[in-house]
Length: 448
Image (tube, rainbow, N blue to C red):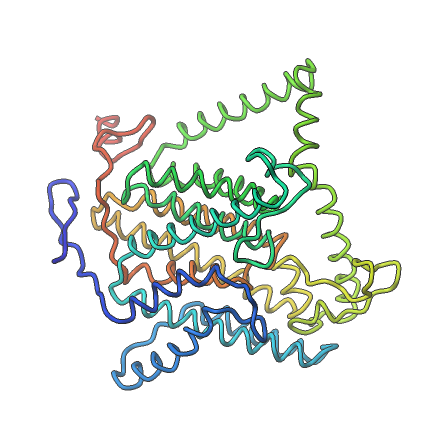
C-alpha cells in the first residue's frame, strides 16, 4: 500500500514501490560493489560474477517484453568511444587498448541495466539505507585491520606513518573515495532516517576516511562539505544577502584564526607539530609523485595529440631519470581522470567526459525543480548531499581515476534513475521560514 506525503494542505499519493526478484540483484550489487579483492582476470571483481548472469537475463526480458530502454549519457559516451577508437592508432600496446575498451563496454552495459532497473519504481530510501549499512561494515573492517596492525590507539590512525586502511579494496585511496561518497549518501538521508543512526554512521565513515590516510580523500571531503552548505542554502531558498552574510562570517573567522596564529604566533609551533605528525605531512610527497607522473605522460602526449591509446599510460617507457619506481622504467597510470582521458583518448573524449559530469548535475537539478513545481517540499536534503557528492567525486578525479570504480557508476545510476524512483520522506520541513529565507509570501509582503 503506497503511503502519502503532504504538501501544504494537499495530500499527494506516493507512487507505488515495486518489489520483485530484481531487488535481490540490486541488493547484492550494493553489497558487493565495494568488495574488489581478490581481483579476478582483467581486474574483475566478485560483483561481476553476479552481473554477468544478470545482463543476459535483463537483455532477454527487454527483448521479450519490448520494454522501453533508457540509455543515459548517449552523446558523451559516443564522443568518448570515438576518441578512444582514434587513439588506438597510436597505442604502444594495442592489447591494453582493446582490453580497456572492452571494460568500458561492459561497465556501460552494467550501468544501463542498473538505471533501467532502478527507475522502474524502486525505493530511493531503501537503496541508500542498504548502501549506508554496507559502507558502515566496510569502514569498520578497515578500522579494525589498521588498529590490529601496529596502531595501539585510535588517534594513531591519523599519523603519517603506519598502516593505512584498505578494507575490501586494493588501495587506500580507493577506499577513501568510496567512504567519502558514502558519507554524502548518508548525509542525504536527513529527511528519511533518525538522527542517531545517521550521525553515528557519519562519525564511523569519518574515522574510516582518516584511517585511509588519503590526502585526496580528505581534500574531496572538504570540497564536498563546502558545496553541501551552498547547495543546502539553495534548496532552502536562502536569499543572496543571507548567503553572503554567512559567507563573510565564515571568512572572517578563518582570517581571524590565521592572523592569531601567523601574526601573533599563538599556537604556531603546536600547529606545525600537529600538521607534520598527521596525514597532512604526507601531502608534499604525494603531490610530488603525482606531478612526476603527469609530466612524463604530458611529454609523450605532445608527440601524439590524439591520444596514446586507452589503458596505455602504464605502457609508456621512461628514461632512468624519469622513473617513478625503483625497479621499473614503466610509467604509472595517470591518477587523474581528466589528464587520463586527454592523454590516453584525446581531446574529444575529454570533452565527452566533461559533458557526462555536467549531465549528471543537470539531472539532479531538474528533479528538484520538478518537485518544487509540483508543490512538494521534501527532497532538499537529498539534493544538496547528492550535488556535494558529485562535486567531491569530481574534485577527487584530479588525483585519482575515479571513473574506474564501480561504486561511482552505481551512484550515477541512481542519479539517472531519479525520475522513476520512489522518494518518501518521514517528515516534512517546518513551515516556519529559516533566517534570511526568501519565499513568495515574504516577497509579496515586502512589496505590499
